[in-house]
Amino acid sequence: SITHGECQFQLVISPNSTKYWIPIVKEDIKPKVGLIFETLETGLQYYRNYGANGGFDVRISSNKRFRSGMVRKQLIVCSREGFKPQSRTNNPQGGGVQREHVSKRVGCMARAVFEYDDGKRYKITCFEEKHCHSLTLEAHYLNANRQLNYGHQKFVLNCVKANIGTAKTHRLFKEMVGGYENVGALAADFKNFKRDLMAYMSGADAQLIVQKFLSKQEVYPDITFEYAVDEEKKLSRIFWADQISKRNYLMFGDVVSFDATYNTN
Image (cartoon, rainbow, N blue to C red; front, side, top):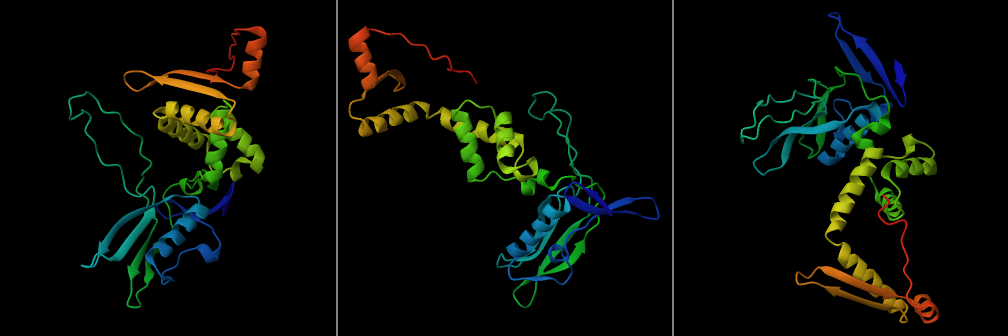
C-alpha cells in the first residue's frame, strides 16, 4: 500500500503490466456486494462518502426504471469513467474553430450498481474497486470535499466589503482553521463565489445604497439623506450629511474631501 497525503491506495500490476489503483479505506465505509440500504439516495450517498475518502470523485450514471417511474437499477461510477465524445473541429454555427476542453475521462471502470429488491430496499449487486488512473493525492482537493457553506460565503462577503482579494481571503481563512486541508474549498472556489456575488449585486447596487441610507435615517433621525433619479429611473445623485458634517459646515463652510480607498481593488 502507498500513502499520499490523506489517502491510501494499493497499486496492483496485472500480468499484462496494466496498473490499477485500489483505495484503502475503513471497512465500515467500503461498499460490498449484498449491502442493503433503505433508500436509493442513502446508498448513493454511501458511495459518495467512499469516493471522498478514497481519493476520487463520483458521477451518477445511467439507470433503469419501472413503469411507475421508480428506479429499478442505478449505476454510479468514478468521475473518470468513459471517454469524451468526439467533437467536430469546425463550429457548426459558422463561428470558426470551437474551443477544445481537456477531458479527465480515461475509461475507468470503478463503479457500483444498486438494484431494487423484493424487500422494497436497494442492494449493491455489483462493485468494482479498481481504478485505471492514479487517485487524488489530497482528499480536500476532491469536488466532493469542496463546498462553500454559509460560513465560507459570509467570510468572503466580509472580505469583499474590506477590499480584500480572494487569494488573500483564502489564506486568511486557512490561518483561522489551521491549514488548507481544513478550509473545505480552494482559492478558485472563493474567486468564483465572489464573481457570482458581484454579478448578482451589479444590478442592485443603487437600490442597496438607497436602502442602506434610509435604514440609517430611521435609526438616526438627525441624518439628512436625499437622492434623485434620471429619466430612465437610474440613480443620478445622492446627498448625505450626519450631525458631525452639519456642525463642521456651520464652523468651516464648504469642505471637499477625497476618498483615497475608492476603487482600490
